[in-house]
Image 1 (cartoon, rainbow, N blue to C red):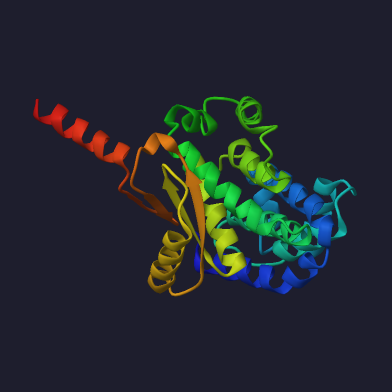
Image 2 (cartoon, rainbow, N blue to C red; image 1 turned 90 degrees about the vertical axis):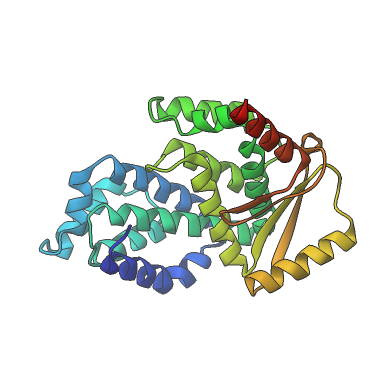
Length: 275
C-alpha cells in the first residue's frame, strides 16, 4: 500500500502531465511500451529506485541517471514523465515503479482513444477475465513466479495471438504476465478493467449467459446497475453455453454467480462434504 506522499506524488504528476500525454496521439503507444520497460527495470533494481527517489540527491544527478537508463532513445514525453517523477517525494523508493506503470497504462488508454478502440479494449479485457475464471490451470501458469517471464509470455501468445484482439488489449494482458509485480494475473486484469471504466466514465458490467441477452434484459440490467453504482454502465454480454442457464454478473471485483453450472458445482461440494 502506498504512503500518503507517494499517492500525492503519483496523482499530481499524472494530473499535470495528462494533457501533454493525451496530445501525443498515436505516439502514446511507443511511450506506454517504454514506460512498461522502465517499470520492469525499476522492479529489478532497488539501487536504481533509490537513485531516483533520494531526496538528498541533486536533480541534475537524477537526470544523469535517467539519461543513462534511457540511452538517448526514449520519446521526449517518456523522458519528461521520468524527470517529473524523479523530482517528487516518495514514501518508499519502490513506489516510483508503481507510478511509472500507472503512466504506462494511461499512455495505452490515450492510444486507444486516438485510434477509436477504447471501448473495444475495455470489453476485450472483461471477456479475457471472464474466460480465465473458468481456466484455473491456465491462469495459474500466467502468474507462475517459478517460470521465466519469457515462458509466461510465450504461453500467453500461444493462447491469444491470432484471436482478433486489439493490440492494446494484447499489450496490456502481456504486460500483466511479463511483469507480475507481486500480483495474481486476474487481479491485474481486473485493475486494468477498472482503470478503463474510470477513464470512460462508466462501469463495465460483464454478464455471462448461455444464450444472448434480449434488448429488454440489457435495458433492465442497465437500469439496475446504473442505480446501484450511481453512474452510467456498459453491459458486456458474454455468451458461454457451458453455464447452461442463469447469469453470472461481474462488476469490478464483485461476482454474483447464479448460473446453473455454479449451482450444480455448489450442490456437488455440499454432497461431497456431507458424505
